Image 1 (cartoon, rainbow, N blue to C red):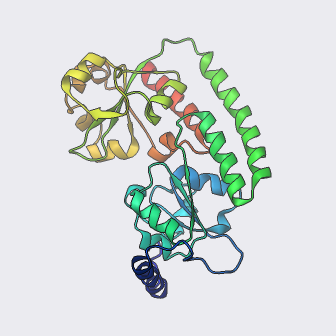
Image 2 (image 1 turned 90 degrees about the horizontal axis):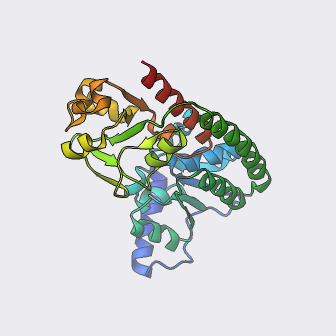
Length: 296
């Protein structure tokens, strides 16, 4: 990522000083009066939508989850979505911040708004319908409503084909345990109302964990009780864990049907869980991974 220039940093520090002394007056504005919109996108799925709508020329910054398309990684970074800084965002002189629900902390978003920047927070809504809503909303925000309508129609056709193919499969839905293992001391499993839960269901599987929403720490008892047929991770989580052998040494996993058969699969995190325009392709890829693991 390109580093922020020294003049931009000085300008931002002056803005923050004014915010502090003037009580964050909403009249302060970081953007130049050129008439051109300058977008900062926080959320990999949102960034993909901006590119989908052919508005990448208006992007001036992204967060660290904005990895696709690869060219987005050449833009200045405002850091990790959950630990943003007002200074880093304002240094890019944006006119508009597009942010996922995970973006924060809230005080930073308030500071950005107080500097006169329009902030649009888009609901995560881990459903295909939520993706269509985000495309429509971003299209309206950035002046690409006709393009948004065209792409939503195309995606609806692609989605209908994808779901019909999966529904026609002659197999019992496999029980899938999603393990979030990006940090060695934070091994979690996915319950309901998560992106992983939605993807497992969309791909013709069944979440092996029931009884709670969100994520909870992995325990041997929960893993064994779940009796998963498949263990699912992100590629990044599998690498961070040290590979399949290391994953199967996590609490209780080796004692499950999936562990005994070494049925451990992984997909790229942004592709599988980003709920961006590649969602139909991500569901097809996960379905194919299920089939391959179950037939091995």
